[in-house]
Image (cartoon, rainbow, N blue to C red; front, side, top):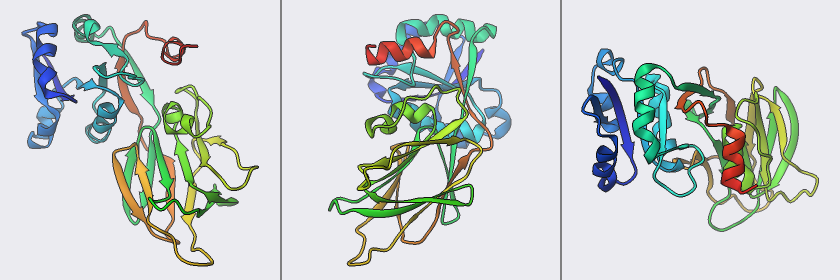
Length: 267
């Protein structure tokens, strides 16, 4: 029997999914129940089935990382860059999965540390100014080398997977997910010569929010994958580095990233 945890954006669509699968031998358990099960039982599950869009996929990432389970992304949303399988393909995909005939991708993750808390990100960690819109001042240090000060709206530290997310909207480059790099992308910098900067993914990056010479900073936020939002304090370092293990994703062998890129961006 194929055992899967599942996370679905719209629970009302679950019945539609079950009718599409038409597999009595598939056992589905809500992802929210994973912590209720002993680890020996969790180990008998094949993957986490994500049904929705990219936001739903990102919600599943911390679970996949903690329990070392691959993800299967099924697009029930609109854009769906991470959820590359359509619902019509799911029955065939599950059959191939059971036979061990699907491809597994590995995606680099960011480990973000702040005030003795550690977070995992598939896309990015974004440091952003608050609702009043005042300029913030950040310092960027890479591999113990101070690189520059960044006055502006903030800074994005992105993985290759996240390069097509917030990074792209802020003017950063598209990076193939197999590239072993991270990208630092200033958000609306007040220095015209500040541009996105690509670094090897084994480098550690440290970002610090500085005090203003006049007045004080409004609330400055760290947004992780659009899911976790922290208020950060002045002079408290944020550390970004490659996570100890990658995220695993099951996908169809014929799915090619470059073809997906062409399709999604209408190139």
